[in-house]
Length: 169
Image (cartoon, rainbow, N blue to C red):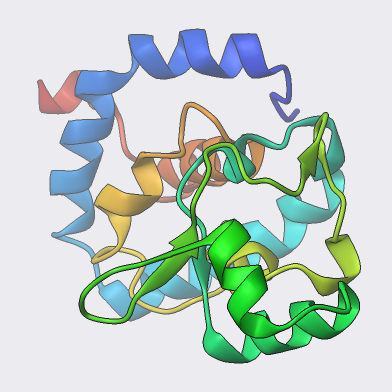
């Protein structure tokens, strides 16, 4: 059974902080490629069961944007890329671009107002289909108390790997 209530996830996540730190150490003892296979499989099972439009928590953090996405969105809004950047984008000295507002300008309630044109980083979230889960664990766990998909994938992964926090404390 999946946990999808955001308040419950937040509460349970707070209770499991030390357990999740122990799990990080445990993961480093596992075969990374096999862990990726398990995470990808769990993500494929769990993600379709979660309605992301009832949450929107991922839209309340930094969102990366590419130049191509700015060009595409400027066509949708019928404005120049420069005007779109001026209004919505912050660019670092190294050229990395992010939405200049938290939450995202395009979040309306818990849904994306530009969903069919959303950015790649939004399409890919929660990034559980990507390789190197063990190396990305720290970043992923920043969303563990916020994202029902991540929360449930991590909890099911603990079960599959036979992780028992009480044996590790």
